[in-house]
Image (tube, rainbow, N blue to C red; front, side, top):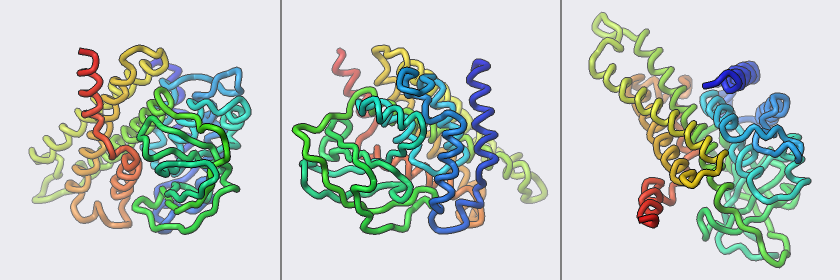
Length: 336
């Protein structure tokens, strides 16, 4: 990692450490709106909102290589917010200069909702994360997977019908009703925008894997059983070593994919799918091993570890309809 990226990582870590603690996430069943808004102000002050917005539109245009560094820190800190949607997906869509400027300034916060068979003027309902703190809803045509129509709506045009008990207390979920604008044809989200969304999320999952592994290592060093640290037991050492290898592999893949996305190389799509596959595998391995190594305390509300497991499930949820490994195979076969 070069000095500039290291400085970005260190600054992000310091900013998040001073903004909230994991105790804030465990203080209630659902994270309070004021905490989310406070973290968005941290993002604005740090310049994260303009990472992928071009300089001519008011952003800093540092690209995905810098964005995934911030994403990893957001993931490890378990910072609540619709980060990938606002910092990566929205800036990569053709939303116009006014929207890009608002994204760079941090006055636009975007959450995503999927609805099948979207039609202009017809009321639709969908699940929206962080509906109470978003300013805009990006309605995606759920019938067309990652290659479909979208509409950007002001949150004021939507009605929150019900708030639900979320799996992850840091990801509040609501059912929202909205009507699509009567336009001639909805634009489409595809290609680089979808890849940016997925890669940023993969970096968040990598951060979650690092956080879970760190806590497991600490526990293995301090927990004693039969008069010895449990980290000295061969079964524990092997399990943690496997997780460490998975995390390092994912880190290399995410960094490589970010450069591919920035440089728009031909292999970028496959590189991003590979990064996603490795990052999700690392998050599953780290959280699963962590729960087992901690024993019953790992799933207790008072402990931090269950928060990592729940956030990883929340981040993976929008992408579970299709296997990344299957997509890689399909694309490789298409080039034969």
